[in-house]
Image 1 (cartoon, rainbow, N blue to C red):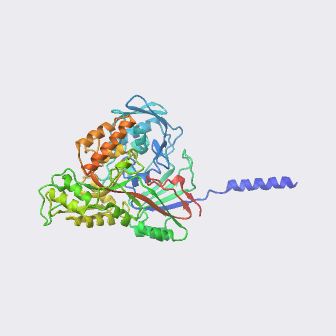
Image 2: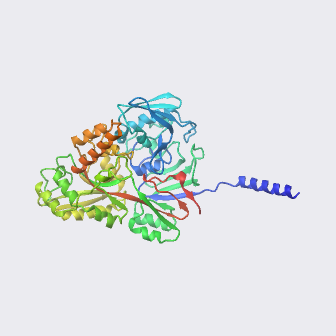
Image 3: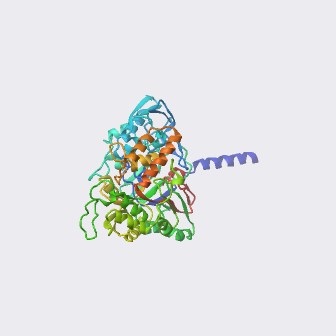
Length: 531
């Protein structure tokens, strides 16, 4: 009788347990900028990508250490020299309930390859062919040794949804008055559903219970808010308005760490900061002599001026004082964590004011000149302070610099619509994390197939030749030689003044646990909340 009673109690307990509703756990988090769009193919801004990635998934994903792992493609293999064959993951559904097909994948490959800002990454793709219901071939003009790595940025969209909503082709971002269905709506396959998108303000997500993957965390909802003011962002965290913030101002680290039930985590970012100088125009924008009269030539085109600027900036002081040690000084167009990074070449230019003045005089500017440094205010850590420090340092060598602070959307449009800048601070990375992409996207001469993020419009035939060979070279030994050769050419000719690799610094309440990823993405499916 007693045993029967126990069984009844256990059974009742089990029923009650099964009947328990799933507790809703909402993560409220904030970052510096909002998503520029929800069309995954119309921008390569990595804050936007990190937000969009919750909804749209890529063919190849990245693990916590930034290594490629299966995504919507379960496996991939080369077929001949110019074709990669993808085997698709089965039983994947879009958020509208439709099944992802090989046709959707082929459509997405061709759609993103046609996008203006992805020319450098996917511009060599000539076709995507459906082999059968679970197999797609991606065909390029020639060998593409790092295509699987690039596919970490290839997002899959429903062909029918895109066609039905008038966005079968990629809408332009940055055009005045641009509006398209895919800027505010989404239909991906990812772990989160887009519940609401208010451009410039916030994004609301709901858990996708039909997701094919495994949720490691326990959140059911998430609200991302753009708070570009750093003090306001910190206040929102400390007041409990949000649970977590990215880009914690470095000066606020001790205050947050000393606040009960708060924690700070950090890690190297797959990004480096650089000062880009106009390498093409005959006359530089917003640049004059000291009396305000136009110069006869663009001083930034002269490598002696570029070297003078490189030697006139104390990058270590910027890291020590402004970045408070949360960054690493670099001297090449790469950083630890990038495939192809060359540690022994990574030596910053010597800080030498006298040498800087001497180089300026040799270039014909013994009295220096005046210019404007365009500075994205809230996009990267402490950029306002960095730009002011650069202005102060260059004043010592004779270059008067006016800092023009701009909010990120305004700054991004200035570049994408022009670029309409001759001197600016920016973070650079390429797209896939391989130095080859940095070469192709950021440093190679701008043309129809490359240099789409070469906002400096720098051009160097030797460098282009190295890049042309690298993109079709499969041999690892030769590839390493080409990485080294290209990085050295860019450094010797001062493609840009490389400053530092910033560390990501995130702050959160004790109730949430979020691991830092080098690609700046908060993976919502992995967030644990214990209130």
